[in-house]
Amino acid sequence: MTILASTILGAYGISHIPIALENRRTRQIAATQALCYHVQILLEEYKRTYGSFPRNAQEYEKAIGKSLPMDYWEHSIKYQSYTDAIAEGTNPSSLGRTGLPSNNFELRSAGPDGKLGTDDDVIMRDGIFFTNSEVKKQPAGRISADR
Image 1 (cartoon, rainbow, N blue to C red):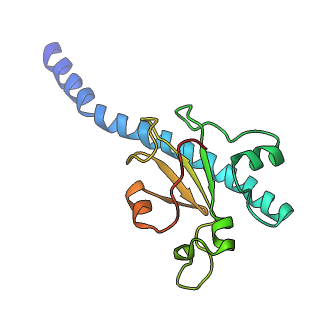
Image 2: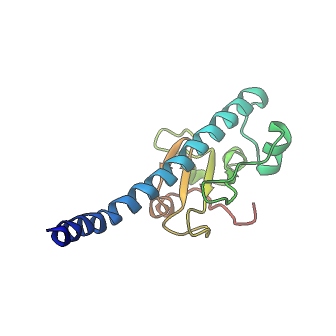
C-alpha cells in the first residue's frame, strides 16, 4: 500500500513539474514587464518636463540620475527613441493610420537567454508589449545591442 501511494504521489509531482516551470517563467516575464511599466512612468515624466522623450539611454541617465534598471535575469534593459526619426521625417512608416506617431520609444529586455532579437525578448513600445515576431512585422527601427 505504501509503495502504491508513493508511486501515485511521485507521478503526481512529476506531472506538475512542467506547470511549475511555466508558472515560474510567467512570473519572471511579469516582473520584467512591471519594471518596464516603471521605466515608462519615468519616461512620461521626462517628456512632461522636457517636451519629448530622451533621445538615448545616456540622456535618460543624465536626467533621471540613474541608469536603466536590470531585468529579472540581470541583463540591462535597452532603450530606443524614435522621436527624432519622426521629427526629421526619416521614418514615415512609423506613422499609424491616423497620421500620429505610433512608436515614440522602445524598451527591450533580452529575456532569459540574454540575446537580443530572439523569441524570448520582452519588448514594450509606447506602453504596449509585443513579441519579437510582432515587432519584426512593424516598421519602426530596430534597437541595437550596443545601447
